[in-house]
Length: 224
Image (tube, rainbow, N blue to C red; front, side, top):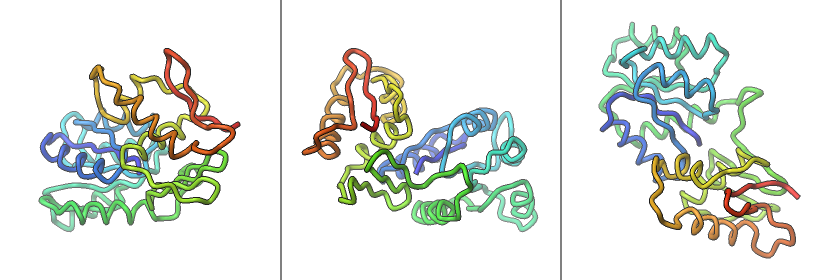
């Protein structure tokens, strides 16, 4: 799944982010409500984890702004407020679920999966396909021509980004930022190494590859 975390507590955001990424999910982080609305308005996510108390624009304001603009992504509130009135107010604004802090990561994950399993809207996808590749974002599985392909979490994230960018160029810098969350060049061949491993699993034995290299620019995944 691709998940947006809107949380001003860096320690809590890191706890959620590292747990989700370890399982192969792709995440983005916004530390205030205004940035949260901006991210959710221009990117497509499978779920949003939203803190209730945020600077600049609180959680209720974020939900209302997104729903008014037509963003229907499922939203899980995180809050210290456990009263019925607060929950009713959150649901009334357009939230989908509530989790009271402090919480166990396993419960957070279970609630996210439950939200993602709800019948998708017309413009939301939980299964991505390109040619004969099928990627199930909920079950975290990849198949090509019906055959299951075992991927490591980072390989899954890399393939997901390439599929979502189908036909467009993904530069090395873009991959470092979106898949590895690096805002700098680590001066290693980490991207090249993972692309090579992914190719060996996706394109091995195929007459026509799906993953292509544009020298000096980056990579592209496209159907024959």
